[in-house]
Image (cartoon, rainbow over all chains, first blue to last red):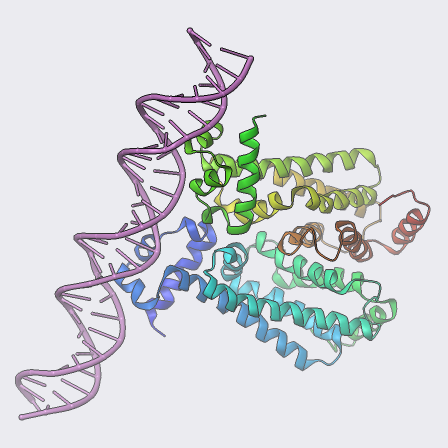
Length: 207
Length: 207
DNA sequence: CAAAACAGACCAACTAGTCGGTCTATAATA
DNA sequence: TATTATAGACCGACTAGTTGGTCTGTTTTG
């Protein structure tokens, strides 16, 4: 990987997350990088491609994490636990990517938008499946509508991009465990919740 | 209120929510309205002011609803119940406003941004207070960190703008009651939850 | 008739993207 | 080894097009 290419991504990540995609010109980026238009367009076809690269980096990462979570555990609620943990922990790795991802996705050019949408939909589908399977096992309350429930969970976690700061008063793991606490108490059946509490004590699940 | 002014707002609401603020030009708006630049700038100082008006309409409405909820009930968890209900029900009234509000707030010019931020912060503060008071009364679990909890709740509800469609398979009241179900089971203490269930049966709280 | 409402030609500023060219490093050649 | 050839990385002045906003009228209204 080229050094300049990485520097352009880092810089635009910071600028985009502060001022938004349309609040930053290509000139702004190259000035901050101490490079030139030529340097920029040598590495990227367009400003839109740069936006796509940022989107793809993040969504590919969490999608991969979700698939690993599904493989690592066989019980849906533990898969869910792992998915939530990784989805929140990403904030310490890709905070700015996430801000841009959630803020600017409407501005992706169609050719890129379809690629991102596919992965985004894949992620949603995995989450929905996990919840549905949890319901079939009577671990998750059957009276909850599956789709709304999965969007609730996703919303709660994804909203983090609006307020999370790395140097804030709470660590990302504290935030994650609060989310998981609320979600598991909210979704699980009494029996499953008791079992989950026991497995926490026995350190079967490490945080 | 001028008729053209309303038409401009309606039109831009639709266009902004589809293509984003920067994906719509003033010319696009006036063409759709069958009016002219003169017409537009007679009613708005700038495109930015129009964006502000859209933001303010929505946030002022929900802020007002929150204050009414606080007055109507004296017990925090009932205030919370009412706040959530109104915050979700707004989707059938201001769906497009909300999409724009959540998508384009970064592009508000500073003079407008401070005004919106104040109201937004007011709303968050009310929600946080309600949850804190609920904790003091032992209605809401004391082990939950107040701030993260209130942001969780807000996130879950606010994320709705990402997927809700008026003509979708679920009514807004079904969605609201699912949210409330999950949140109340997630946040309330056992005793408070039992009481809440009883008051639902006795129709003390109507949905 | 005066003031408000609207029309639309026009402008100045800005922006993404281009293109001919340079510079450096490594490989091929003699 | 000395020289030439080639390729990739990068430069920056320039362009073509777009956009928000203005300004001078004209029409409508009370």
